[in-house]
Image (cartoon, each protein chain N blue to C red):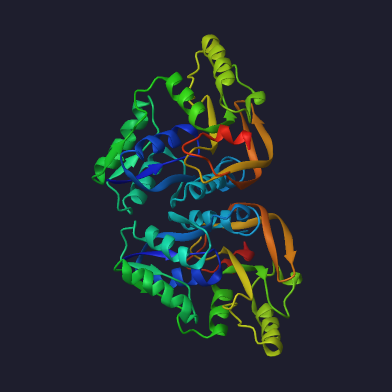
Amino acid sequence: MRVAALISGGKDSLLAFHLASKHHEVGCFVTVIPSNPDSFMYHTPNLNLVDAIASSIGKPILKVPSSGLEESEVEDLLKAVELLKVDGLVVGGIASSYQKKRFERICESIGIELIAPLWGWKDEEVISTASELFEAVIVKVSAMGLDESWLGKRIDGELIENLKKVKERYGINLAGEGGEFETLVLDAPFFRRRIRIKGSHVVSDPLSATLIVDEFYLEEKPKQIGQAFSRSDAQV
Amino acid sequence: MRVAALISGGKDSLLAFHLASKHHEVGCFVTVIPSNPDSFMYHTPNLNLVDAIASSIGKPILKVPSSGLEESEVEDLLKAVELLKVDGLVVGGIASSYQKKRFERICESIGIELIAPLWGWKDEEVISTASELFEAVIVKVSAMGLDESWLGKRIDGELIENLKKVKERYGINLAGEGGEFETLVLDAPFFRRRIRIKGSHVVSDPLSATLIVDEFYLEEKPKQIGQAFSRSDAQV
């Protein structure tokens, strides 16, 4: 069936898209853009980057402005998804029943299916699968035991080991499901071009630190023999 | 009937949207984003700004990646619009039969109506209506008689008079229909917030000069009594 996939640019939503696309035709992406005045430049570092991701994958993206207030976000998303000729909505939720119920409500009310391929996965399973499939970096931290020094770091085996140490001490979720950190996917096997960050800066407040991407470009990927992860490009 | 409106952020597409919305429910905007590697930062200064415009108006926007090659653009747009539950597509075309035929082909093939409210308008009629309704500035010039000094200038009576002088000498189209210049709409009666440019720079090549918006924000508009154009805000 034809579905839409809700993406943020982070690992979970793109992993959910990847898994769903094995069984369904993903016609387009959907993303929420905050409409509060300040947020275009500062609060949503990935706002332009989701366009780049959609473009790299070669699919249209429906961007839905929303005030960011919880209730209106559901309404805004509902109205927007209702515009699409799709029979399902793919989401990256892993463990939040609250979030899942909100999406179920949206899907039920417009008569489409909710598809949550990561639902019930263990946090370690999510992050290790993401590390194997994606070139993804941390773009926001907001938890005890994490700080600015984590920003821009690639999600790989070493980082996961370090996250486990923070989990032992402070009980964070390894996949960042509780908002402990946010990621940005720069490359994946299904990207036609990879995102290269050229310039960035960090914005901090007492509760969080965010990597703001100031400049980036899309780089052609070398032709690969068969199915290969981006990692193998290093040989070229 | 419910329709989608193709917008670029410029005066023609937003004028077409404005006129169409008097007779139809515009469910969402559609815009084409170039997918060639360099274009995200440099060739499409308005790429983020169309998000801001959609957000200011409070409607979802479907962004369609395309290689920019003419034939594939038609195909990409067709596939994307076909995803939408709409019965018509609004375009800002004024006089280009070539462009109109391309859009007619798209609409016919998916069984929807082409709505071109500006079709057949005189160039002076278009630019003077835009100057009355919008706060719009010139963001690209590419014609004899125009140069960098025009960038960032607001489209008002004085600018139109100056354009007429260039028209007399070099025969340009006053609405920029031949690509002589491009505009960006920063405010309109139907914007909930106006776009304020905070930082910009100019990129030139032998054929054109472009104003690249580096930083902008959305500003709340003062409450207005009755229907008023943005110009009246100056009194507040």
